[in-house]
Length: 164
Image (cartoon, rainbow, N blue to C red; front, side, top):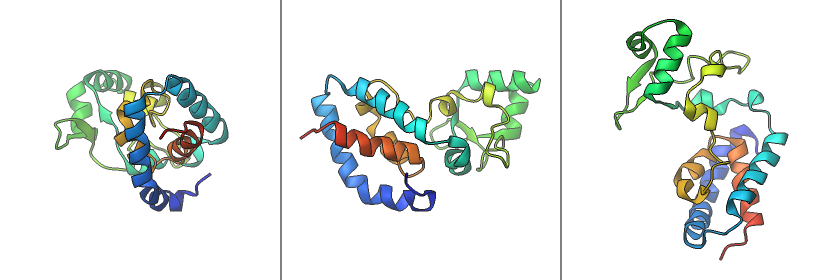
């Protein structure tokens, strides 16, 4: 697996190649793409332990939907407005995001203190098991610079999907 201290540089070196790969996937839409993506995702996550990394939680923040805010506020037994004021801000896209990183809910042991009620974006990260992965190529490429699993999944998919 890619060492965490090298992932950003390696992802940048592969960015042009990866952009081309996802552009081709969008055009060709291989019939077995969803199956290969899911299989590769499952395989890589058998090898990678997110608790040893947590780079996503340390360097980026998820979007919080209204449903996320309401669910987490209930968990803390506070009003949604109080949760927002305490932890969130509105970003340039008018989305609720964390006020700062690393995530306020990340412990020193890399465990999430709100894991059972975490935001949808956290539950689905790095989104590599999504159907029609070609539709989120830009996000996936960005995630290869953050998440060793996303990086490895894209590299293996390039080997398994010989697109032209």
